[in-house]
Image (tube, rainbow, N blue to C red):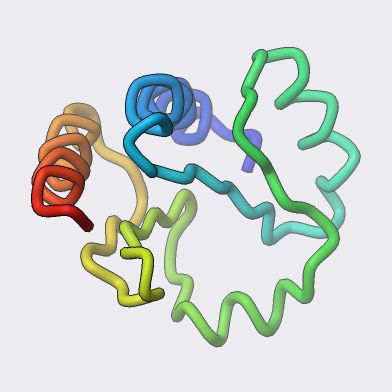
Length: 110
């Protein structure tokens, strides 16, 4: 997802990764547009993202399994694999809501 919405959102996810990974948060991004796999690799390197961005998956299966209706699509998933929150698309300020949920879950030992 090399779009304005991803350019706006992913720097916040880098900050979440930097801030909360010592407390157990794992940030992982997945590209669901196979034609952009090479571009995504170059773009993420250029942006300096240090969390994993997975490419080369079965996009049809991902779209179906996660009911993808917009990109970016973000999930907060606990250590047991339970989806705690879903954020479709990106809107300015959404990172505050996501970070509050992260803090809530990490504070609760999630």
